[in-house]
Image (cartoon, rainbow, N blue to C red; front, top):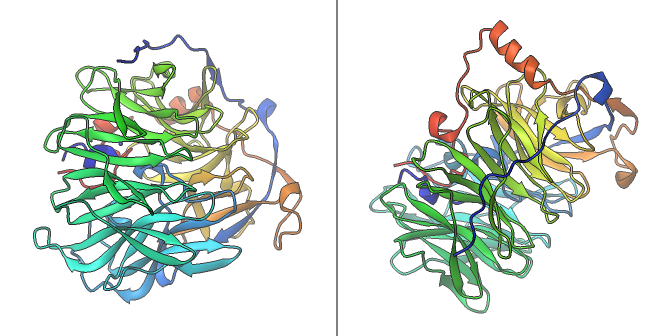
Length: 492
């Protein structure tokens, strides 16, 4: 399916693109701020080389809650008996297209303890996608059955509660499923699918089990977000084409969110006010614009930075502040942005040319990563807040660390940050950053002095640097670079 498994994790008035004021993040010496140091926690592994949290270009999600609990997947020291026939919907195969030769299993990190959440009976590998505020964890696990069509291990939607794993089942003739999000009430959503990745969106509750949410008249659907009120957002489309729409589901009714006239729309996030953000293609499908939708306000184009042709909104907090990425210089580069009464260019760091914002908390602190515009490889995790400038999180951790922080995926309301890092030998490790501030007093290993963060590089200097260093400009957007901005499955 060219629409990447409906792109999950992609009669209302349609407003045109707004003429929005553009703000530039504070630059240079005048914008420098004092920052707290952070205690760096290397989440580590279960004896194997790598660990991961789910997020960034794959699909921004909640893998860190306000209690400071982190969920992800980690390698064990055991060889994967089914390698290289791995399920493309699970773990590093989903994140990076990487067939892991090791068995990997879901983890929960809390208060310094790493817990293996285990798998369903007979299964080897498992992976979580979401943790709720009260600690419920949604994900998928192998079940010990080999799909006769695909030849890879089947996976089933699971919910971990109090350290116990629960099989949520699947729908009808669909042999597989995955739970992608869960709320505090124990309502989980996701997709049931077959070896060809034809999918149906589901809602699971303890009282009623797994339920088919239906479609927008098409054959496929997937549910990727659920809020505290039980509202659901996802995608529905034709299983064998590139056409899909975003849906909003509430009280048994699914409605289509209007688009901007192109073939593909998908959502990234749904907040507790029922607001949905994502991106929608323009007519012809060459470019996409970011949207914000609400039941009472309809859909609106959030706008782009000057010179941008495409943009995408990746997360929204409950205040309605959205973050994501916008093209500049005819989409040769992309910059992290904040949409809040206008659009703010957050810049980038260390002379890197592209950046993307992936999370924003209730205080307006934003995290994300800079990346190589040609390869989409992440380079430096960043933090932005209080008007900027953007700061490289690697400058705020103890010197001599074995980890290079590449991308920050989630930030909670206490300012704790989860993301991905690279070890000195090139392995990927999940990390947690704990701010050494007044809200985290007495943390062992914390340096409570402040440091002047490295300022963001201005947009103009980035373009000059690209020319002087001979870096070939390359479009960053998903139409031209195949960056999986909402990849929750393979591209057929």
